[in-house]
Length: 38
Length: 563
Image 1: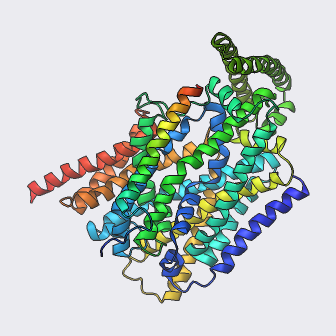
Image 2: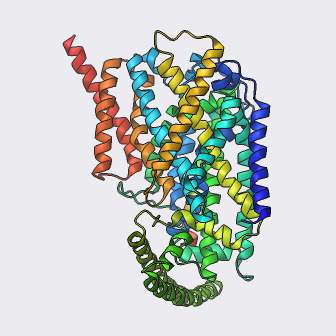
Image 3: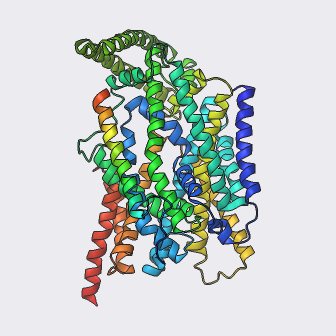
């Protein structure tokens, strides 16, 4: 059975990239928070 | 607790339980009881997955952990979003295509019945024990703080869940998860706001973070690779990825959640929703712990947060020793308070020399605080060997009771119950599903009508509830942080189970015999590696997985040569 498209971002690949991108963003953000405040 | 607290607590719990029962009381077969007739939308799946993972200990232990060791624990979750993506690509389409009730069903078609039953047994042992701890952890804290009998607290905690799990099945669990998550999130946000309000007037959130940072609590990221260290970026991303992949992909308490979705799209969206929100949510919980730490820098904290044990000390032969330690603590706290204000002023004026001097003085004060706590812990052990000498789990609840308004205390206790109920309900349902589908239904003599199958499933649910409550009764002496203990227990088995599934998906040349023996040997080796403390526990997950792969390949070669 072919994959149905997700309701946002057009394709599953884009949605997966969003999840991985947010993870990467959070790690970078936490790194700067650690650097700034520690 | 005041009358207002009791009203809030009872009303919240009654609403959750009755809603769950009335909305979903018509189950006629196993499909309805275990899969909710595959009818749930993505947001329901996502919240259900999150509520299953976030047990009461998440909300009790995590703020205490941040208070004690800072925010480095967040790194534990870094592998989770990656695992959600891999599950969406690989596991979900396979499980949905095969229309399985449990994850282990797939293994029989791929290998043989023996591998399916062995894997199901590993799950049953691990989940049965973990659920006992999930019941015990909040029970012991609540019973200690409020003087409730531990027997009845365990029984109430494990028993209330059984009512709606039994009547409403998996759909009731998913629906109650929505309420539980809304209540938990709202209460934790409110708790965070309250802590900020309780800080001195001239200390805002940013000031609080700066002070916490200089006291070493904003150590969110550690880039150093050290396999013996529990939390760093690498253990979180690499080892944590294996743990989360195994937990969400092969632990029926989670698989059962997303199998209730309408279709593959809804299952995927639910898991990706979890992948996006889990780390920010955990960050928020840890951040509350850091704010509580800052609050206690400007206000003298208890030397030991478990007041019941310290009250016992005051009634014992060690009373004078304890009082002397308390006096020392108060003097130390006053000195530290002065230094904290100095640090705050130095940060404002950006005077690096003064910042360093204040930091050094605060560190000396912190070390002394920890040393005094260790002495109290020793006294507690001497006075009451059965007593709980760990303190991490009591920090947040002590703060709630001492400093938050009545009514809200009841609501936060309801949060603890709700969170516990959320994860325990999923566990009961998955334990019953696995026992019925993977073990009992495989017997040749199994030939029952739908209604009888449903009745047997309900009896098995009752059996597992009783088993978990019994484990909770015996789960004493568990040591420091219970959130960690549950994860350690999971790490014993998850790598092996994940290894079996990954071989099944990606290594088609391996047969049932080779995978079975490799799994047994790998399980023994993992327990030995843990026992001799060769690596930090998170690494047991990838190691277990690699061992299963390696041994399976070797055994398959031997079997091929013999043929």
